[in-house]
Length: 210
Picture (cartoon, rainbow, N blue to C red):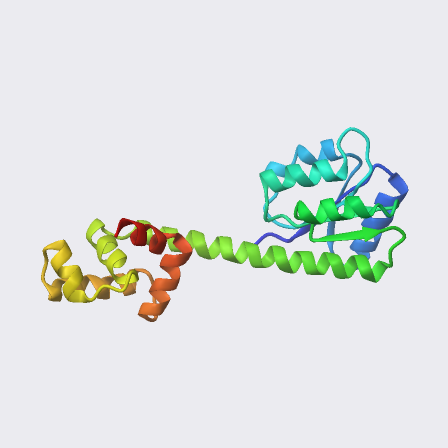
């Protein structure tokens, strides 16, 4: 079960930060406020989901600098950058660095809430992909060495007879390994098995090996 997403609001202006916190809390969203990027960075390594809303112009560490650090540490964590200065060059820089949105103060409450919901949906999708990939790797780890070899043959399109010849075993034995693979990987079809192999990078590795 995924933890409840939290919106991390970073702004050195107490009134603005508290106003944003109130708006988000009223909308039923969990919020944590920080008066500086430095304070937020102390907890960044522990964050697994949510969204960052940060002001651009802050002392010591700016919103742009913070965005760079978030991208390095947790690139799947969406960041919304806000500013009261209408600086288009900063907007462009922020988007190039991976910001999911850039809002100019004063912005409409609905505009911020819409941006946050969009960011949370993006974060949820990334979390699902991570969870699925972790599950696939767990299943792969449970395979025997021979089952892994048969899997690598299957995902590059080799027929059972070809895999059998390459491994020095009978086609019937390959069929048994193939059935075991489908069960262990919980694959509904060969295409499902190939999809999982692609996500885990097996298809690329197998392709280079051949």
